[in-house]
Image (cartoon, rainbow, N blue to C red; front, top):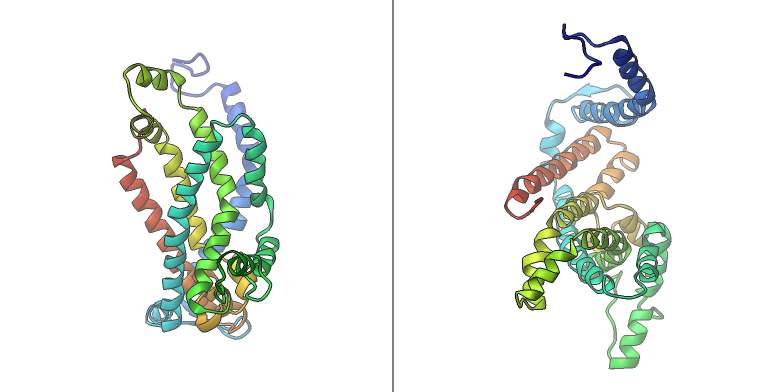
Length: 303
């Protein structure tokens, strides 16, 4: 038993003082969590049960806002677009980031390339969106120009064709987010003890066997972390969509759940329905996150 704890089970005066100072120093952070996280969460939950335009009287309507949105074709379209965007960006970002990290891990000037790939991460989504709008321009954009010069074909109307709008935004998002994932993967790769690779080579394992039997299993905690963060960010996508389409693109092909709830709140001024969409989005992210934590027991190795 620690000397700071008396045999009677009571804490010493010094120990109580240390605990008191500990609580004192976390007070600012605790205040921020209460005011800027927990209170807004509770307030949105209450608003989702009301009918309110932001100025007039508030009317309690129970769960009718949820029922309205879950049968609303516009909400279902936003949900479908969000899931489509997540399905395109998450696996693509993780696979390309892992491949890039594996390649960079063997390069001599890895720090230089790490900075090079990380540069898009520090670029704001607004600036990146404006640049990519020029790249996708059907008349003088970089992609269509090279398609015409190299292959003699006319490129698609990237941001004007409903079939290409969401894939175009997904490509831009993958480019924007790869740098962060590459840095995390590189840190995970450099944390794998070299003795495992030396033992595998002595046993005659080839590169493919080493990757599947050593690298991938020992990198599974890092991969799991990146999957969780990527799915959460994909469900919350807003900046790229708003900058590149503003009104959701042709035929609402790029309206996501966050842009949809933003329009409900700040264009239509139906705060109850907007809050209901926010709660549904929160529930979806929580469900997918818990599901990933449930499944990770089967493929993530911490030992």
